[in-house]
Length: 228
Image 1 (cartoon, helix red, strand yellow):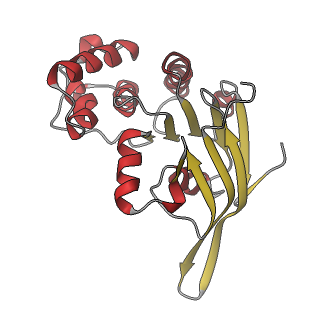
Image 2 (cartoon, one colour):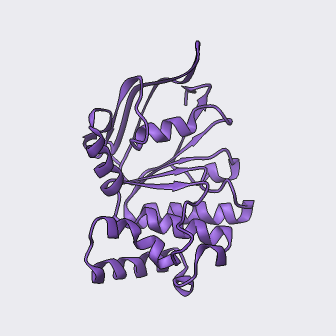
């Protein structure tokens, strides 16, 4: 990856949650970089800070200290409107719970981000067709989420996350609701899409079998990055 500028740069992130007089430090002085086209796994026990870290990088939450830069955008300095644009145009999200709209078909779910961007109909339909083909769901385009298996629903969610050609894909325990074999298929799919689409991916997982597919692994322990 040479001397290429990092796509993601995280410097000194700290996040504290307060519950009455108590303070819970979720992240302490976390710093790392991710290169363009790199698949970085973030592992750690439940409560180690994985979701907090991903939310801060993706602009879903703000840190108490530190800085995040994604594709040249200083996420931590953006106003709310800028964060909306970042999440629409630069970052794609995949969640453990799939997050599909029940009344829409697989194809319509994948097309939602492009509707929000007012992508012309012909271009939108072609992109949906390409993405459903990439995730192996061409024959299921007209089916609604309840007609699909868990693995198929997560494939739709991955395709939707890539709809607007994001530079960064953030996946928070994307295999958490799937059996191990299906989970491995989803991680292989993300691995293949990172390569074919040139996307950087940040994937939180605690599944050791899935870690092996990453280019690099970051381990969080009680909100601190463990030494490599």
